[in-house]
Length: 69
Image (cartoon, rainbow, N blue to C red; front, side):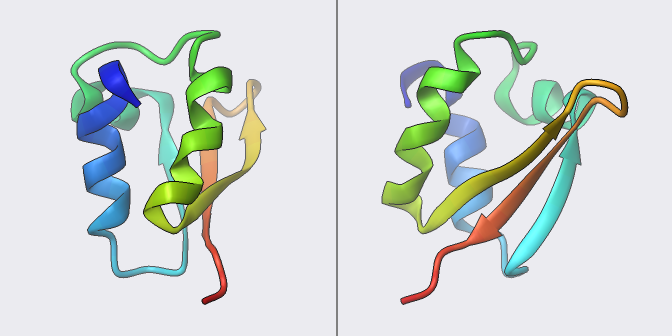
């Protein structure tokens, strides 16, 4: 995920099956703000065992779900 590598590592190491991060938390973890390029990179999260659920622009949150084995 190139610029989102720190976020991918955080997600991969998360022990929860489903969790939510705010845009601010993502910015703190990744070291950069979430932007439209995240929509392209989110597909690569499957390599880390997760997928992006709902992205709420109103609440500025992203839901992540662990993929079934």
